[in-house]
Image 1 (tube, rainbow, N blue to C red):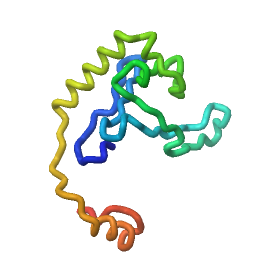
Image 2: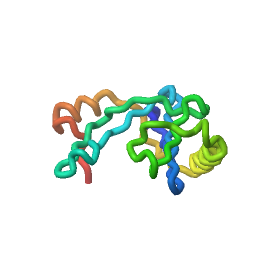
Image 3: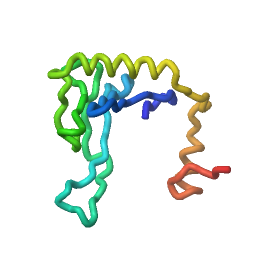
Image 4: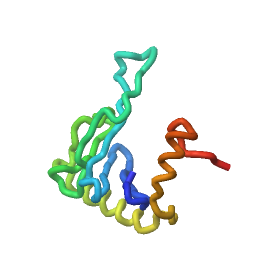
Length: 127
């Protein structure tokens, strides 16, 4: 979610590598849902937005993960894999140029009021 209405390419998976990138206007901060570990095989639990991190365009705060070795995405390996990080970041930039961002109109406070009051917190109605 970019927050300004523009569509954002916020990540890319290539083989074992996953790169996450936050929105500049959100200071590159992202939130991730967490699924409980294999210690709970009968009923894993999803914990929404349990992890907040900065995923920027700089190695120091990059979010490049080896999802084969680290499926929970706990440790960024960007600094050890600078070439992969730069290649994937360049690909995100390419994709961003082709992404469709529809004109969603201007913000209207009445839309939030309707969602909260008339639709129980959901956007609606939909056709």
